[in-house]
Length: 162
Image (cartoon, rainbow, N blue to C red; front, side, top):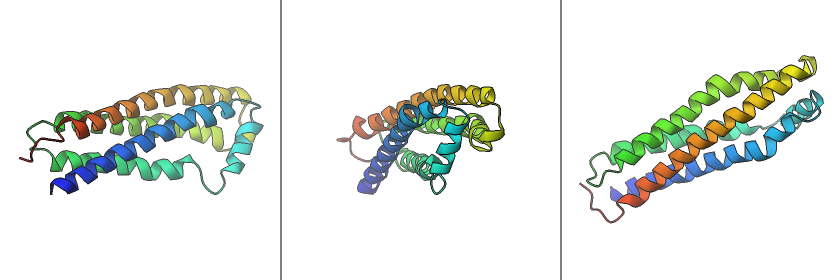
């Protein structure tokens, strides 16, 4: 059972790292393109992403991360060294990142990519700026969750199971 716990926690760390990397990519590569040459730039980006978009990645990785952290928390609850005290904040931080996604980013995605050619450029620019700043918050939350999950993985590797 100990090996299964380790594998699931490793999966949590890897998926949190992937989530963190994807969020960084969004801020460094995609977000700057939202604001140049509006509204054509977001229309081109929308057409480019006709088959797949970042949501295809995040809709798999975010729930996988949440689930793997939750399962690690449940399976490791009785560990004497206290992994749970690192996994609890990791789970809260990852869920908070998704709350920001659904309540803050999705409405701005609708503005940016719904019908950009018929949306005033000022509205698109405001949504793009807000989206970028909101993503910084999401990066901080996911990054902190990743650190907590890593700490949980490393804190008691030599401790026996309870």
